[in-house]
Image 1: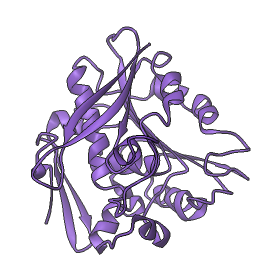
Image 2: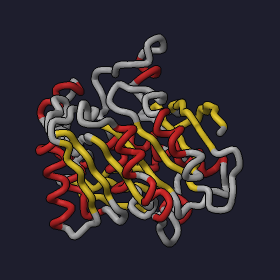
Image 3: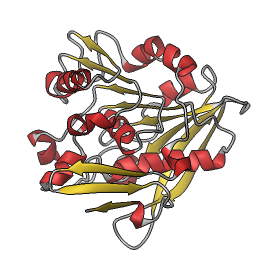
Length: 290
């Protein structure tokens, strides 16, 4: 297994690019059929937070694995401790583009990667990013797996972020609202004793919404599990137990959104979010509001 780090530019809200950092683990050899997988850390975490799951996936399932340290978190926030987040906090909008642009960077570095085998795992806010990413780029992923995920910004999380959100900004971050966009299987898990992200408000509501829409969803609820699913189990154990089947068997047909350069339109209340995947990662025209 190979391990290295990369930096790359992504779009920013000012007239310059934002530099991001990522941890990459790859199989020793890139073969026909080698896929790629994002691993997204939680609010205030870093690119190293889920290295154990990356190690479990790269060689065993023939995947180029990338953990994107998205803006305002981890070492971007505190270069010494690698933890914490900046206030005010964007809370899962620009961060979605950060992780998706990280995947675009990996696909550019490894043009032989099988684009029918693109996956995303995330925990907590990382789960939010995995779910939103599958809505913002709906014809890209073969499978997404979110553990203890945020599904929307409730009052507590808006307070944590330390900023006000317009109605359309909240809806652009609300997976329940965007759930009709899903075109890949969605796997969820949560502990009933989670004090950080209440399971019923987030995973429970999202599971019901997905089922009502006829989407493919599998949800496991761990009675007594906390935010990390402990003491019942832990995220590495559930990843090892649940991931093999989809990582070995799931594929999606057709061109992904990035290759096709698709335009994705998401109705968000008073405005519509328009994402143009034909645009380069640093182009502020990558998304616009109408």
